[in-house]
Image (cartoon, rainbow over all chains, first blue to last red; front, side):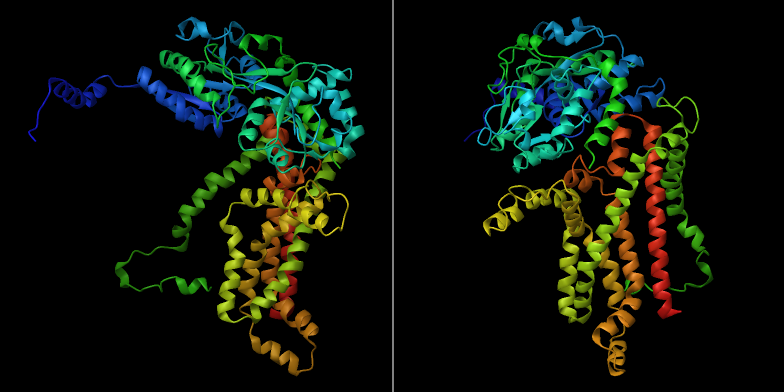
Length: 340
Length: 295
């Protein structure tokens, strides 16, 4: 067997030898992004970082920080931003916006711009994941509830699991409940009054982190939560279905922003562009991440309560600049009213 | 188990060795404590004296808000009471085990010690979530109770203080047993024989000889269990649920969700002071009980 060397193989070999030199010659840029610890960090390390490296030869460095920590860390850094990009839920986003922590955002710099619905982009940032909140129930144990009002009646009330104002999904659900009983975005008293009436019957009042576990163990069979939790539990074989309440599903965005004083604007835009690109959003929608995509070119999963992203404009949204100043008191109120 | 035996004997190497004072040797740890414990603690105190959420001016507002509210006093009382209940339950179950350990052969002592330490090898989060499976509505306990026909409805164990104390008893048990066992194994067996030959009943020997001799270890164990149970944020929030409010979860909510650091700092200091006060009492009681024998 004589070694033959085709022209193609020779070229490939030369290219392979030259590759490290070339890589060193054009030193890769880098971008530092704050990211939520846990599933988000994992997802971005697995999907966004390799895609960013491949498309733009930019290294992604991540700082695992919850939304409030990002705001606190930025505030403490006084002018020298500790990271280039924020990832925030609506509450902390409103706080950061008020305190002038963002650079203006120019969506026309994104290659994926056309594929993102206009409602998800504004002059300060862009949505990278949507959450849709409604009712989750166990179809083997309970009939499908029509809306939040049903949660206060048998057979649902004695199987109800509750969480307070600690999470965004908990806060918006309690607001929706308050609205049914005559309250509003800024008045949650009716929700607490109604909850108090049925409190002895309720199956569980839980911390948000423990609720999926309680549902899985049959401690409660109906609760308000997001589609992501429902899909994740369903993948694990839990009997759970998502029901859109008659008053409408609630939605909110997780958004990406460029930190004020960022010196790496080009890399920051490329990072954001990669995070909302079709390939990454498609992969994020799959288990185990189960994100709701923001890219119109991605086909929506069958368990989601809408067939296109445009339908989401009909969903209920809230004004967090009004909610934020009240949320601390609400948390306190919830503790007091629910305490034994 | 003697820790002194494990250390190499100090070797005299003549005048050539540089003289190192114990203070010098302790300096690295001391400096680390000063930088990473004392300084943050001081900052915590300072933050609690900010009057407003944005931390722009000083004042006693947060302290007034905390102290002049009966709800907060109830939370403090509930937190301390939870710690005392966990201590009582661990002592009630752990002390007999320590007596068994003392009487056991060295081989069985090793087995027992391994059994005691084993829970420490799994994380507290895992142990806590395991208790959801055990205490839940469809959990092991309820399946047994319903299967035996002892109750028609599943018992409510999760999200109750009883369930929380049960799980804390298991979770904190090693903290009681480790100091207790090390003291127990050092009690001279001849003392028991002497007590018996002087006509004391086994109960009298237990209360007048063993208990006082074991007091320092018991007090150390109680201290650890109390401090750990009152601050067991994960177990309290996962097993206890939202209707049982304790200081650690209140601090977390204020610091992490409401982003109200001055109030969170105030609550954190309240936890520190109240837990320390009870710990001081337990330590004093242990010294008095031990002193009756040793002094």
